Image (cartoon, rainbow over all chains, first blue to last red; front, side, top):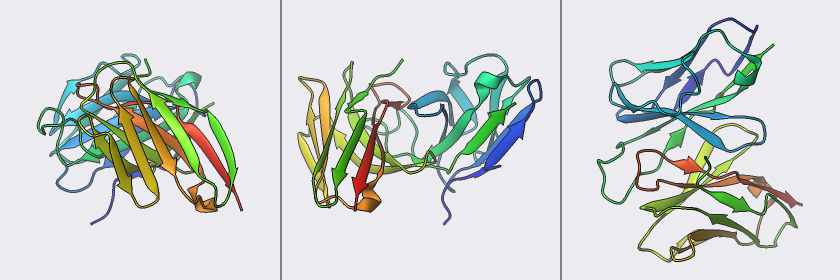
Length: 120
Length: 110
């Protein structure tokens, strides 16, 4: 089947507006991850879902960031009252099994193409 | 905070040469993974090496892991222009998420 898809691919918004970013994981993948990557930087972990639950929200930068996942599939990352420092590429990844379910550590993650967010 | 640090930050070589990049990490791990990223977009998984493994091969890729030094290296042999990308190591550190390094930008000139 298809890989991980994300929409929109690019989003330009004005400071103070809310944005929603969408991720469609690979069918059957139980775990879903959101990352943020600023220009020329590594990946910053934001949140992960095991099924519809988000056991670890520690990476969310502020309470303006929230995420949900429904039906164990699609996930949306919402950023309220966007700020210029929110500008980055937001990457979503999914994996067949999530943390603690597989001996030997985390398995391979499949990444989507990302959403490039620009806050003016 | 970053778990992994790649070295060098940038590397430029000619086609046909080998490229070696290194990754150091801070805490004990279950496994270490290497990913490639083209044009600042999605990452592609290259190879996974478990903590009880010392070396692993996949095509032109060779990964080594030294848990005593908390370091790993990725060797790309006979490089091609298409190998131009950023390469990241990622560790799970026994936790529930991958922690990515800062990446090595590889440029392969034809």
